[in-house]
Length: 128
Image (cartoon, rainbow, N blue to C red):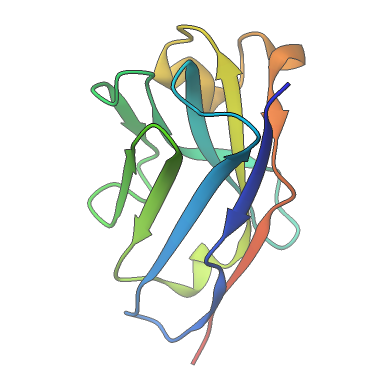
C-alpha cells in the first residue's frame, strides 16, 4: 500500500504563498486519484483540491478557487497556494485512492472512504 509524505508547510503572512508537496514512499502515484484536505482549527477536515489520475480533471473548493493550483507528475502531487488568507490556516493532508474516483467525489470524500490512504499532514499558518 502506498505511503504518503507531505512537506512544504510553514508560517506565512497574509497575501503570501506556500507550495505543498506530496510524495509516495517506495512507489509512484500514477494509479492514484489525489486529494488535498485541510483541517482548520476547530473545523472538520475538508477536501479543497483534487486531481485525477491523468492530471486533467481537477476540482477546487470555492474557498480556494483562483488562489490554489493542484498539479502532478508520476512521483509527486503539488499544491501551490497563493494569496493566502488567515482562514487558510490548518493542517494539510494528502490523500490517495487507487482507481478512477471522480475528483469531486474524492474531495467530498463520499466514495470508497475505506480505500483512502492518508499522509501525516503538514501545518500551514497564515498570520500577520
